[in-house]
Length: 129
Image (cartoon, rainbow, N blue to C red; front, side, top):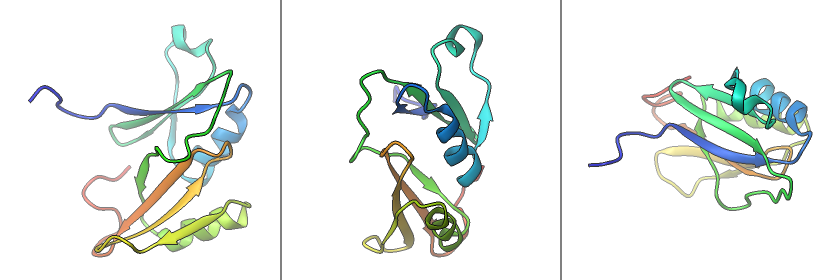
C-alpha cells in the first residue's frame, strides 16, 4: 500500500474571509487553529486541527464554494452543535440515511458543504480532537 494516512483536507475561502472562517471553524466547531509556516502565511488562509487531521482553508481569488465535495467531522453532540449553528444563522439539515450514525449537513460562511456525524453507540468514535 502506497498511501499510509490522510494529512489534511483543503477547502477554499474568498479573499478576506479569515475572520469568518476563524469564528466558524475555531468558534462554532471548536477546532484548534494552527500557525501557518512563515513562507505560507503571506498567502492568507488558516489552518485548523482535530487530532492529527488538519483542515486547511486557502484563499482562492476566483472563489466558488464546494457544494458536493466536503469534509465530514465526527462530533460529540450533534443536537447541541446543530442548535448552536442555527442560533448563529447557519442552516443544519439532519439526514438519517445511514444506519448507525446521526448526521447533518451545513455550510461554512462561504457556502462550502460540511458534514457532521455522531455515531449512535458513542459520542465521537475512535478518533477525537
